[in-house]
Structure formats: structure tokens, C-alpha cells
Length: 78
Image (cartoon, rainbow, N blue to C red):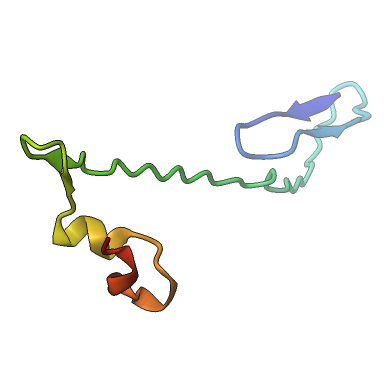
């Protein structure tokens, strides 16, 4: 029995019949195993700064990254 296992490929197995003293040639073809790719995206928001009165201030970058409909920044203002 001939068995081939390699990372990234499906295992290959073949049964060979060899007579005493004979030699054989066995062509094999292996298939790639299913390829997978994983991408993990993490984003860390900047913390809000607050002044002594406890009011929070948004930076331009924080406002730009907010999911606002049609980028209507005026709707964010109090």
C-alpha cells in the first residue's frame, strides 16, 4: 500500500501489486486541500476627552468615523 500525506494536500492512497524482483512506476496526483483564509479586524476608538465641567468633546477624527446618515454632522450637535 502506498500512502502520501502532506500538509495542504488531501491524502493519497493506492494499492500496489509488485511481483518478487520486479519494479514498478506509479504516477500519483494529489489535490489541494480546501484553502481557508481568516482576516480579523479590530479597531480601537479614541477615548473621549472631558473638561472639568464633565462635558465631552469629540475630535474631528472621532466625528468623521461615526456612522452618520449622509454625513450630516449637524445632527450630532446638541
